[in-house]
Image (cartoon, helix red, strand yellow):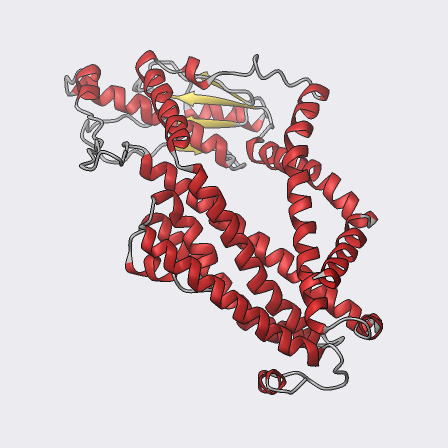
Length: 437
């Protein structure tokens, strides 16, 4: 154990003090925030070309009411289409919106014409169609003598109110939604963390083998000690990096808000912009979500989630270390050998998505008890409070299988780490397992 700890310490300190690690750890949260801000800016930026559009509405469908927006100015005109086309040719207007009369109050479709040599942008087209659609709805209600308030009263919000039979179990109408969202986030995060840091272990082993550093280390260490130290060291580096990100993200957010003059209090409040009934419903739902999160058994969910992460990381990292020891400079060999190992990990995330929708399905239940799949699937099911016997079987089977995989990987690692010039295949790896020490 002392030698394993020395390797762990060396692996951890070498990586943590590396300039690349420091820059990546410090700049990644800032990069993520900048990227998200850029995406929001790009997605929220519509057409900014100023346009003047004449609206030809001889039937008075819009009743001379059509709101202009930032880049679109609408002007109602009763001039003939020929006269308006002359204005367009003289570049005094950018287009003509021709609205034919709506003769049938029960019509299912309505086609308007836009006269211009330039196409409308998608957001402009959507805004015009939405505005015309609202006016047509009001026109139909008036023609059919239907009161708008009466029509709104026909809509009924239907929702289930769960009533538990056992006194020690509490379920609300929003429990499933909160549990599904939480399970999906946890499962997705587990998948990427295990995959990313498992690949880090494989690359570290490959680098030391290619640089022949491993020959010096193996003279004073057993292969198993070296492999376990490397797995533990990279794992601790990962936990350190995630911890720093969790601390830096809110700090960078508040600093960015201060530098760019973002006043959260002055920002529009969607609740205040709603009508009283909708605002009350919104606040009620938000309160239910927070109450639901507080009522969850976090003393049960967090320790088990951490266990499944560590067990899954150890299992996959050991296998990645074995693959790293088996290949040389040819990266294609590594890709062909890692694909079968990644298949259960990829398969488990898809089962996790299925478990979000149906946590008690046969697929989700059995997958959460099968090693290599359970490290992703069971954390997804934990917010749904699965039976204790399923958790017990899952934990025991995962521990046993992880120990077996670490032993298996160590058997391959001890041979492969000193093997050069020979192409590794699965048939060859199976022989290495049974080589005598």
